[in-house]
Length: 294
Image (cartoon, rainbow, N blue to C red):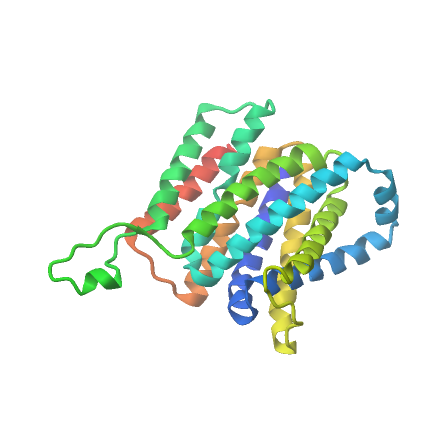
């Protein structure tokens, strides 16, 4: 079952991120994240409301648990803002795989908590990191060099990669936190609902100081935002159900294969072109993720 939940999360996240690319370019990163969170919270509120789970768990959980939920919500918020911004300004086929290496950090933190890690897992982390370097680096001449006679191409990071790396680090910490401090004491659906609600409230509270618009999107933009919210909430639910089995590293790693879905959709629909070294890097990222999950 952990593998099934991980695969479901990967497909749902990959689709959500592909839709997010269009939504962020339509209404911006901040509003996309706010309203996709609102859609997810609304769906889960109806889901949980039928069995009275919200009222029961809100009153029976400790203050320490809600503190962990708040930390998780904040980490998820910053990570997703960074990732969605990278989707908006970067190349989808590059930033998605770069972000997807977060299981390497989750695995290292899981080792700290006592999970056994083999040499193959360590090798998988190394292969993934090499893949990130190749995928994130472009050797094509930049515009400034193109005007120089005899100028040679040199390696440089592609747009959005820095934000994708930041998101990857924060996601890695957050999934470890969820697996060891939240999901063991709270149901999967309730954990997604609570962190989503906290993130949405935080986005509204920070909109003024951050000078970000939270104006309601026009009707033709709602379909995209709703799609992102539905697929993303369903992915987190599948992932958290998998985490409840206790196989934190396995579920996290398989779920991170979402970037394969995103890359496939970008290749089919957007016809994105990459350099050979970048394709090699993406291939190594997927190989590394598979090795980590063995």
